Image 1 (cartoon, one colour):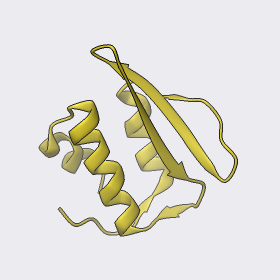
Image 2: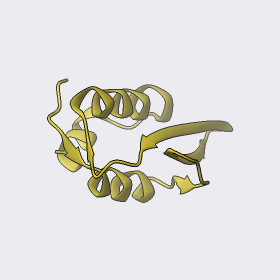
Image 3: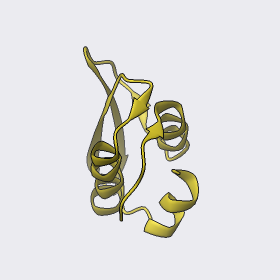
Image 4: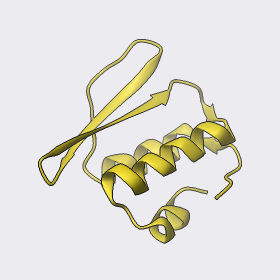
Length: 78
């Protein structure tokens, strides 16, 4: 799936709705959640707009590591 540039606040809002918690970071924000006893970490840059390649990586991690349905992600991150 190819995404266009997305505003960071849209990604953060969606990630938080899935139960991820911000745990800090320097030049990137780090969000952590647990699913089925496994800790999942997402690293999100602190730019206002996130580039397409980075959005693809975030979506890939949500689908592969956190088990989120790809169609659900498509509805929430655009």
